[in-house]
Image (cartoon, rainbow, N blue to C red; front, side, top):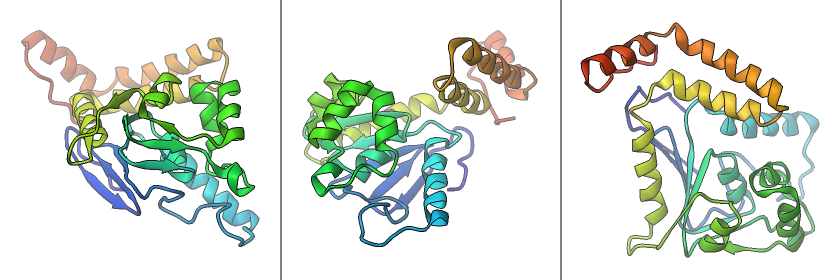
Amino acid sequence: MAAAAPGALGALRTVGVRLVAACCARLGPAAWARGTAPRRGYSSEVKTEDELRVRHLEEENRANLPVPTIAAIDGLALGGGLELALACDIRVAASSAKMGLVETKLAIIPGGGGTQRLPRAIGMSLAKELIFSARVLDGQEAKAVGLISHVLEQNQEGDAAYRKALDLAREFLPQGPVAMRVAKLAINQGMEVDLVTGLAIEEACYAQTISTKDRLEGLLAFKEKRPPRYKGE
């Protein structure tokens, strides 16, 4: 994926997914077990150790894109579709959307990060309940358990969540690109360690913003009472 220029709205199409505006991942009606590469565990083919290693790196790269990512779920996000959404920073869905990790119905387990990211998103006990039961949630139910941040009534075009995701992306775009990148890094890494270590990570990330041209531009723009013109430098 090519990096979008600061303040720009970019778009990328992949199989069953649309990434927009650094970035929104749109999961439509055919998001079952689909992504940018063949899904582990959904075929009888035995994966080699090297293939599994590559797959792991692909999953981590999606989760660690240096921009905010928003998953917009307007249709089905079952199995791999929900795992893709879980790899995003923020998830929004239409009330009529359906989502769940249903792999145990097929006598397998989630293989694209679901067993690790779902507990981190909604807690271990509830994640186990949903995975063990292969339960499918609608938008309202997903909002109630904290799986998504926003739930919308579906519109006639069938893209209510996608439109909300674009609104959020446009709200994020004016901020300093370097600050956004290191803020995401600080949050992601800090959530995996104890508080004292997390605060040290935050301090190190904060230090990366102090010497940037964008920081000086932000201070000047505030002084001159005008919108800042950030360049990601």
